[in-house]
Length: 152
Image (cartoon, rainbow, N blue to C red; front, side, top):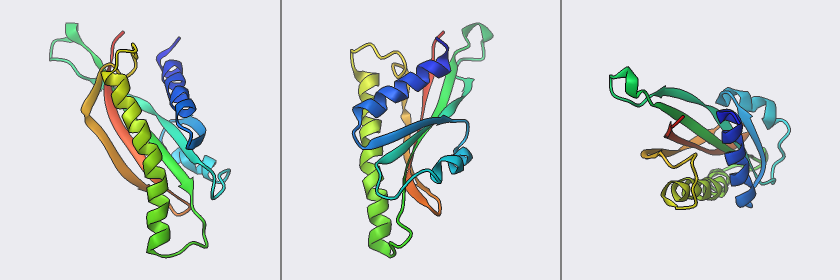
């Protein structure tokens, strides 16, 4: 199986483990979310989009020891109710999705630290893990950014 299919299967496993996620897709960049936003409804569970990783070098200058590093993102969004206005609605929208994103962050860390044999996150760069707000006119959410080494 190719790496991208393996990554998709890993994300599908996360979706199955987290009850707050109702849809998942693999996209090539966050701007592609627009094609999915129109299909979302306010009040549904969170939509999770795995952004295809970018690959870089995580090795010494010696080409014989080249090791690829995957730079990855998972975007979690909910469509917001257009009639909801004010600070409370704004906070509630981010707070709901944050609990889902935080649960996925914990899965990544557990897969990295655990002894279940998760090869995908075994080489997670824990210092790279970030949870950043994601805000567009129709959706609110979080972007989970992280990197991990890829061994061939």
